[in-house]
Image (cartoon, rainbow, N blue to C red; front, side, top):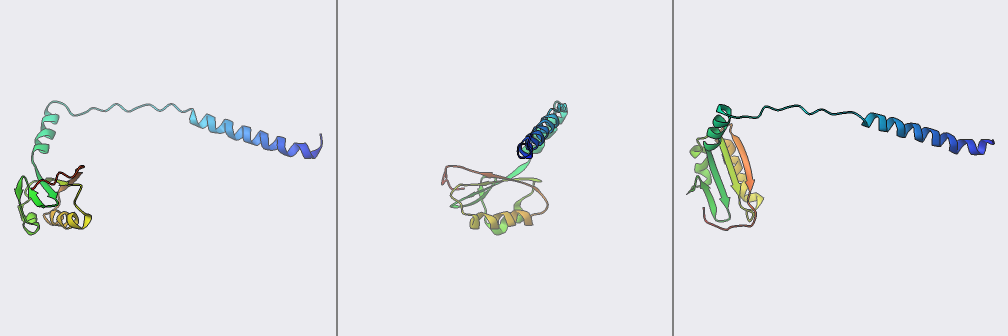
Length: 125
């Protein structure tokens, strides 16, 4: 055999060896970890936590807290719950809802959850 044909054969051997090593490393069995999800008393406790939340709704026409109209300045003192759900209508620009999020942040350390509404209802808060 001439040296001219050895170079492609060496490349083929190295590529085959690399492919075999790649296959061997991918043949790992991954076992799932069993989870003990909340049930009974723990589920009831989580449900009571979820029911105790303030809901801030931001639409193109204004801001509402738990269904009642409120100003952005009064929002920080009116929030009393540890969980705050902020619902943002799709027609609201970022420049309009970011100051409201700042007011929610000013109310203290809370669990803030964002929900973006699709379809722009345009309803008054």
